[in-house]
Amino acid sequence: MATQQRDKNFSGSGSGMADAAREGAGKAGEAVKDTASSMTQKASDAVKDTASSMAHKASDAGSYIAHKAEDATSAVGGGMKSLADTLRDKGPHDGMFGNAASAVASTLESGGRELQEHGLSGIADDITNTVRRHPIPAVLIGIGLGVLLARVCSK
Image 1: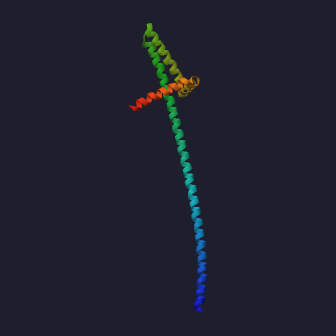
Image 2: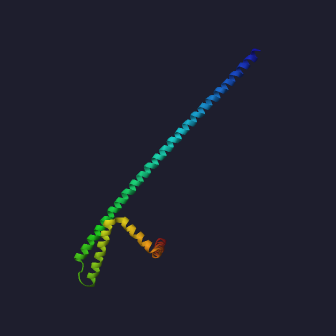
Image 3: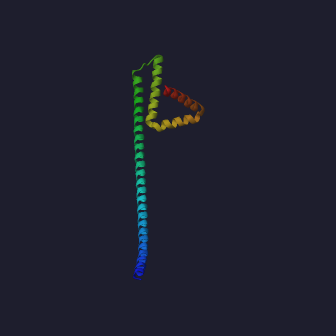
């Protein structure tokens, strides 16, 4: 009888231990779930911060490059105007060569002025307007340039 009582007490305490184990496992599972959720949120925040930082740096780099391109375009425009002045001063003044030199100088000067005043955006606007006014020749020129480029690259 003492054995039966002991078995009964043991099985009763075993049930209590199983309940305690289940409760402990449940708490551990909740802790793991909370930790995983917290780590996922932190990783997500880190990825968002990194992506935002990279986008900002790319924007800054693009702005810097655009600014430098505009500066270079303005310098080229100044060089064109200077070349036009030199051509007028040192080029022929009479006859057919004088007329050609004068026409080239005028074209260089007006192109240089355009570059200095409007920069690359002005050139892009001019090209866009020309293509809109004359779409068929623009497409044909594009096809011709594509064929030419393909031949050059294939050799």
